[in-house]
Length: 190
Ligand code: AMP
Image (tube, rainbow, N blue to C red; front, side, top):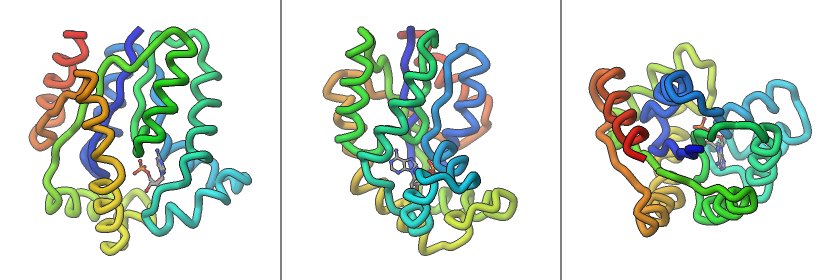
């Protein structure tokens, strides 16, 4: 069993790389951003709770996010492993994830961080906004807030797993396939 965290700022290519990783390594992909968007599009109570936070580029509260994540993990008892994309985004979420996996006799095996500089991120997200229809992609102030939130609340998660010797950093600019080769190298070394 391999449980991975795909880490990095918004627009760093996590979704693109996750799609390739699940194909090659047969892991279950859990993207909390995708899950929230799905709930919102169905106007569920969970979607309604998340909406205002997402619209501002703020984090949805930990209690809400962790409960949703737990349900999703529990729904896949036979998974060979998970790839967590966009989660954990706070230390509290990381601790909850470790506790949840340890209840199942498992753990996180690696955090793989995609490093992309701010100017490149802003450009990529602007481009994505043209087709994604995501309102949090089209407003530059909201995009910048998401980057700020990433730096203040989420980057400590990298250090948290670095203390467990599990964090790996990869330069996330270049050809998609070349970046994927670097990620594959880390996964195969586990
Ligand atoms: P993403 O698609 O990963 O960029 O997430 C889009 C938005 O969903 C974020 O800006 C947050 O508002 C919310 N979100 C996604 N994942 C999380 C998480 N792990 N914790 C809190 N909020 C989240």
